[in-house]
Length: 195
Image 1 (cartoon, one colour):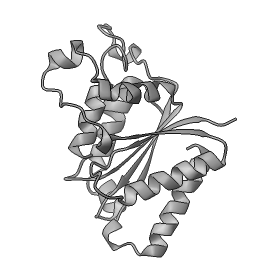
Image 2: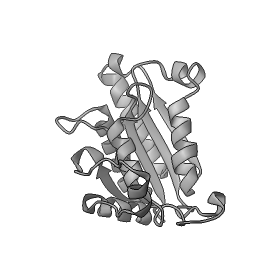
Image 3: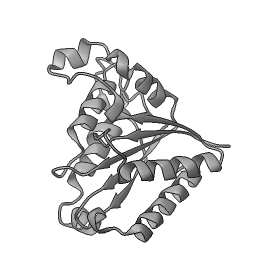
Image 4: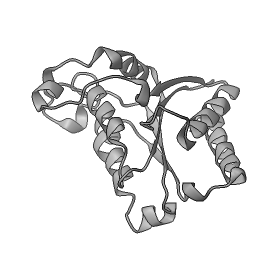
């Protein structure tokens, strides 16, 4: 039986396709081929404001443009986030999206005394796919994959999404067509496995 998979495309440039888009397409194709149901949220095509106060985050409502994205997260059994590493972290637009959708009442219980028991998005797994210019081993071992670890612990883990697996893809500025094809095949395989 197939899984319900949500792909969150976090590349902020909607003007043209990038490697993240090709990888997401390959994952989706592999997943559908294996009988999984796939939905996609492309953050670059959404129009929403930045959160500017704790009060708005705690007591405001999710912007109408993100209601479908929240519903897709609630629907999913497995979430795949794809984004390029920019200045050592996820792009600001993706962070703003996550801040908007991971609100009290949706992502965790509002006013809970114990935040570790308040997680409302448990029962979901995730994969984080990150492209970067530096070698992935340098990012993992020298920089300790700090931003990916923060995403896993402080956002995904905080709302109950686990386990979270990583696919770190480095040296993307030097890839030839054969290397891109190999990466697409890798993502298609992950999609087929629903992983």
